[in-house]
Image: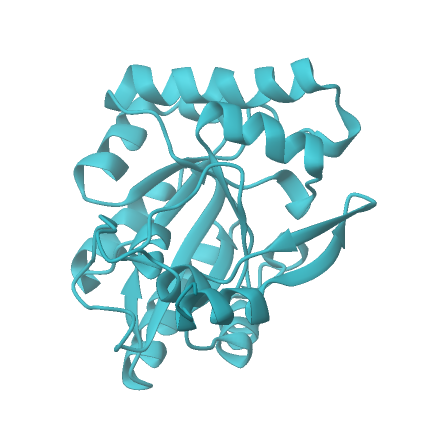
Length: 250
């Protein structure tokens, strides 16, 4: 008889079904990935074990941009790791020194496509090009290919997942967003994130908008006061490792 595996049961219970880009997709929560990790799993922990600690992941989309170095100064001062989903065209190519700094300072460098096109509107070859061009651009700067991607607007489907699997990319969605593309009010951005923050959450912000970087210190300080430890997305899943093609969402 096959032994009962609590981790597998947890994964089955917490896999969510949602509609993205007109296609029903299953998503896996980081907590479920951790629970279902094999005994010999080799995922890298951060400063804590998120199976025991109150973890949260801070992520930034669509950079790097002019304010990213200032953001990196804040993260360094507060000793907070983050995950950066970078755009290839006009960003990675324009700011290679910032990309290198993100990598050198211990943050997770990830893929947000080449030109922020909606992938569910594309043919497989076009999807592959949007992702592969950014993979190569980042590898040229850091020497490493990203293992995570975030689809623009969170829109994915079975075809996108298949291409991501081929390229070794896991898909990462989010649980808290400030919709900072709609406001430059840093206090409002901070409030929206703090209202939505939760254990094992993934925060989505954009370091390309004027009001976002000034909101980050207050977000970090308040969440630390609430007992949270900041980790990268892969650290949130440890001891599991991100699985290519899988869509992760808290």
